[in-house]
Image (cartoon, rainbow over all chains, first blue to last red; front, side, top):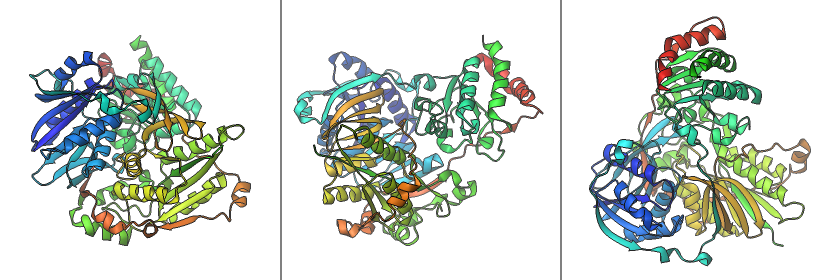
Length: 323
Length: 296
């Protein structure tokens, strides 16, 4: 039995994928069979770097068309015909979900996304993953193989990207398999922006506004206070859905996940879907009128008061010290 | 010019934020005795899937599905004067709880409203749900573009759009934030990918999974519109009409839920005292934030 780790180097996130997959193999899986990395790439210049980033010693290189997950699924489906290849591990995020799901469907296997951990047994694979909008963690048993697992996006560790010895086991060119322009329903691809939430992901000081701000004006006052303090600004989903702030400011399960040193949450109840986005924060201070709100238990310090008023006072105190 | 026929699938879910801490705790534990066929029977009999009691909680439209429903209306509006005619349909798989939402959608201009009747809970059965939707699309042959939210329900796995697309053999784009109708067989789509925002033109038929779109809220119909469509017909479909046996489908799901645990997030929750916002802010700063300033 062999597991294949899939590193998609045809898109711009290979560094992060490698770190995440490395961390998951090291800390997230037990009973692991021999693993190899399937590295997909579209530009020969990336090949050496991608091999160095691979999270396993054994590496198989596959050249394919850029941004063609359908082509990658076809190649993986062929690999799954080898009965030895019973477990495929994909990165977290959108592409991992797509590849794992489509591969499982085409091969009669089982898909499991957002894996926090897996335990591999002779007959079954057990997987833990968030359910109920992150209120709970479910344990699942997977039966039909191949098991196609994409890992949770929380997996990431710089140390897991450390270089190790690699052996290139094979190298193939499958660019022809993707077919020509007439064979794809997709036309005129245009990557129009870098990730708009990069500042949130790397933030060390974050202020989060919730619906308790009461209005667009309240949210804008919190945003202005965050700017004065030199903090990044994010919002809960209800705020974004009310169009009080842009969607790219959204934090939580359906937005960005962060790990700031300091996070101040103003006027958000701290529902698990939001909390998921800040739970790795070093220190969480919450300002909310409701002492029974979930955030009152899941913060390090709590002020029971109006979020807008207190955050503006905090800005008066902190801003001069940050200049 | 042919009309573009759009079908939007939506789900009505319990409002999980309305559940109490004790409700989640009560749902913890081993679910293995409710796996496979036993789970299927339990789901069919009680509507309670896998341990967490949600029957008393208000039902809401899933937020991503809500975006998809409004997005389709805006596609129709944008092409109303000189563009491609757009024909809208809505479908939901579930019980009576979906009917008020279907009525609302009819008042908003959804010509076709369909409920596929299922008693059993399909909470952790995306494959069965995908089969039902795909089979309906195939049987009715009235859909060029299928739209649905990227993630929903307690399973929240993000697999459903891909599973439906695979069943249909259609292309699929997920995390869609904008859609523009180009012609009766092409749409221009903006969607989030792991390294940015990608714009792409897609030939129909296809499946679009809607993500964090700017269009987030479903509009509210006028009373006049509601009255005008109050007699509109809602199509009721049985899964057996589609050749699907839900109970055996559930028993055959390739994974089973065996346990649930509440995610513990407790921190110290120290209450910061004071009379005024200024006093409280100063105390918070002095007692906790001051020492953190050097790390920021």
